[in-house]
Each structure stands twice: as C-alpha cells, then as structure tokens.
Length: 132
Image: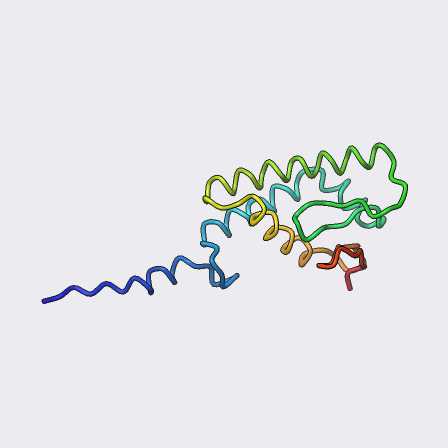
C-alpha cells in the first residue's frame, strides 16, 4: 500500500488567507505585531503631524515629510520614527528569512490602508495625495 502525501495542501495551509500570497501566516502576524508596536511609539505626535499634513505614510513603510520647509524638530522626529521602523522591519525579516524591503513594503501597504481620511499618503508614482 502506498502512502500519498499531498504536499500542496500543506503548503497552501501555510499561506496567509488574508494576503493570498507567498507570505506565511507567521510573517503576517509578525507584521501585524510590528504595526501595533510602531503605532504606539510616539503615536500622539505622529498622528498630530499627520493631521496637520506635515508628514505622510509612504508605500515603502516609512514616514515622509510633506511640507516644503520642515523644521529641524520635524526632521529629527521623522528620522527617529523611520529608524525605529527600520529596526523592527529588520527584526521581522530576520525571524522570517525574508528581505527587509519586503517586510517594509507590506507594512507600508497596511499603514496606508489604515490611514485616516484626510491624511496625506504617497501613491505608487511618488506623489503626495490626501486620503479619501
């Protein structure tokens, strides 16, 4: 008697039903956790800057400065947020054996999707636009 193992069913079970792509459930949960942690770090200030239209989410997972002449304080704040995000993305990527850029792009997509109406976000062409 032959034992037949359906490898494709097992492989499909490890894929995320949410994203329907190559990302594993574990990687998706790690990104979700990352988003919750990232949201908590200086969330009040980040939301304030977003509401004012000074900064916006980029598709690469980082925050960008929207205003033409940002203050030194705003530049430092954005640099700090992006450094924290970069460290978290690197941690998730290392734990899941994937590229940092892939983790950052997935987080960027989710952060833009979760942004509030009226927030400024960067589109795929690199243009800033208000979220509707």
